[in-house]
Length: 297
Image (spheres, rainbow, N blue to C red):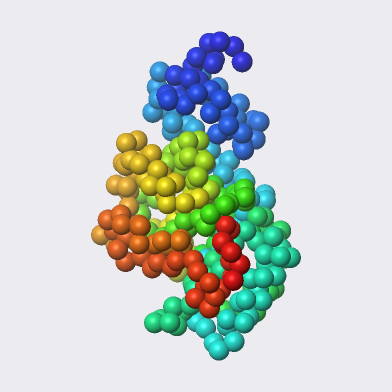
């Protein structure tokens, strides 16, 4: 790459070095990388236009990744029977030991009688291998799938993580876009995801998917996974100066609902999260299964 192109990339990427930019683009296909770098070099004096171009192309690449081998994460709730704990314990053990699940755990809410489950597999193939075991748990009350073949990502990325030394912070939320604003919301979210992926190694996943038709065409589900609470706080601060405008596309009057899995859910005090369910990792029988970086029960 010539000196002029290198200079253009550096200017367009602002505080990011050329090495950082290359690292951020490395998961994309060579053709996509070339298109993005060419756009950055050409429009180095138009930062906003470049960000939009990167967002659109990165979003397309993320959706392509979702159909050809990216990780799969399934979050579900279901009613429990007297045999549920034993059946889930067997499923979790086999999912992790035989099918390479990154995380596979469940918390039973004694007040509601519902179990809140999360299964994270490194690929579509691994998930399909475990589906028969999963089906033994019975029909879920609700199920949201992120990633894998045939699951369209509105924005973001979901990959199989590297080794994790501490239990991650996993936040799954249900949100609603304003009428007619889903495309704009998706573009804004993609720009935020691009920044997280380029600048924050502790951001293991950030993605948004459409809800089922039954829930409504403006409803979306948001997934974010961070290595720890420090990474969580950094991810909030990193996008605030640049992309807070994307929040105007949310229907905030509907509020957000969701669940936080972590080692200390009380640390999440962001306005609007007061109603989130919070489950802290711990030993059985409180928690069934295991997460990365945590001791097996």
